[in-house]
Length: 295
Image (cartoon, rainbow, N blue to C red; front, side, top):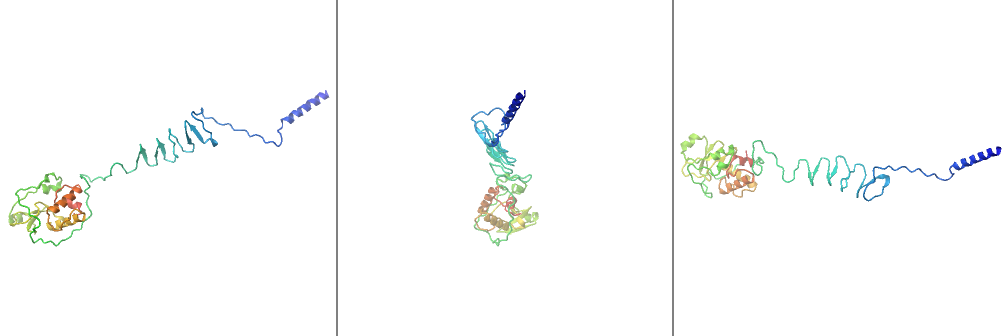
């Protein structure tokens, strides 16, 4: 019986000895369990990469950094704040991408941006804003003589200005209503309190315009039969000379500054009016002088 008990104890000691790990040998580290996310992807497999930072979706591969997005076959750009990648086009912060075009604030492609006009103002062609102020000048002109280089116009009773019916607005009323009238000196003096002599002719002051006083004196000379705007209270010859100077400065008039509203000066005025969206009166009118900086 004693022998049996000794054998059983020896056997127990042997079993305990085999159960202890061997000294000096490193133990194998327990390998962590790899998490699985859904079913395996389709397509060609790619390596898992370090730390699971690459993801394979179909045949395309994108880097799985924070803020990245991949849409379809296009690779999503870095997902900065306010940035979106859609259909291959990048919409930056504060901008909108529509198709292949980028819409920017305050800009429009496909034409220039024009400023809104004043209430009740209608412009045609270029803007008719008031030009840079033009300082009036005084010219020494031979106004006491009768010109010979510009042919005088002939008087026609009741003559109206051709085309004036097309000049709309209250500032062209004087041109639409103008009619050549022949009266003697007493009639002109009785109806108008200011009549001046310029270049062989007499001009009456009529509501801001100078008009030819036909019949005031015999054999009078007029280079133009129609109203002339009375700029800055100047007589008609000085007004015309200032207009010629302003048109010279802008390259519309190449003739002499003589104070005569002859064909060359009238053609220059018409060119300026056409270029600036004004009715082509070929005359010295208020809108044209304001556009030239005269008021």
